[in-house]
Amino acid sequence: MKEAQLHYIACRDHLVSQEVFDLFEEVPGQLLRTHNPPLDPSTYYPENTYRSHQNNAKSFMDRIYQWAKALNTKTKVDWVLNAAVSDHPSHLDFGAGNGYFVQSVSKHGWTSYGVEPSPSARASAQEQGVNLFSSISELPEVQFDVITLWHVLEHVPNYLETLDQLIQKLKPGGQIILALPNYKSYDAHIYGTHWAAYDVPRHLWHFSSDYMDDLPSTWGMDNLPHKHLWMDAFYIAVLSEQYAQNKWSWIKGFMGGLHSHIYGRRTGQYSTMVYTWKRKTHN
Image (tube, rainbow, N blue to C red; front, side, top):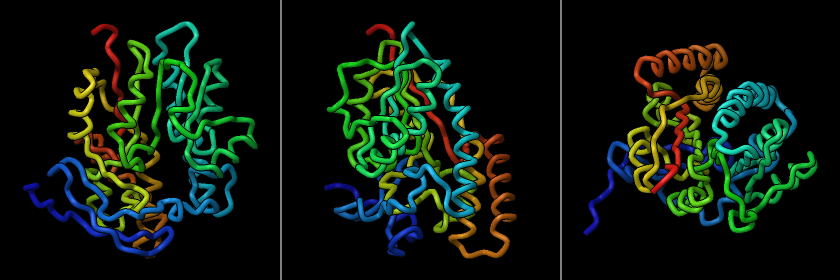
């Protein structure tokens, strides 16, 4: 008989439905699962408000998001460029949204592909001249120097199968880079049920560094040192303050993000953790 899973926390969908979803420990102390996610998740991704699918900034919060995204993009592009293993490098962005990162890498002479299941996000990308594929199976027979997943794996129901498919498309010595919210971070602790990065029910899984550090051994991959996206802590903290309906959310959010960053420097537990796995060059 399967051991009963422990209830961890209950969180509200602040973005769309205001429904409450329970999170259970799938792997005790390492991995959480959103209980009873919707059968049709598309209704929980409003295309006019889901920021990763947007190219424009309508509200002040949208403008902050776009500004933070631009700052993060330079860092992420540098990580990709430094991981080339061939003279004609290629890149895949899985969960490419509006194609912004595919376009950013392409500007550096790389062949960059993107996979994005959302039809409206692909249409938005096409308006910018970026053609995206709807699934891994549609990709051409190409192996990649680098595959990136920026805040994507937490949305994927069958994440282990998806990782397996992606890793098979890496060149020997190639890297897969995954950015994920960290429910062991300082901001997750202080904001609790209002922590914006729980983002239920769109986030089906909630990962820790302990779990992610063990996972690459499944494919015999090397685990490279952690990185982090420092801007994320501030954005998530401000949004969390707003979800909690606290006064002075911008000031308190800035302080919450700063404390989270300091805690991350001390413990290695940042708000957004970036994991890099390297495929071995030989069996």
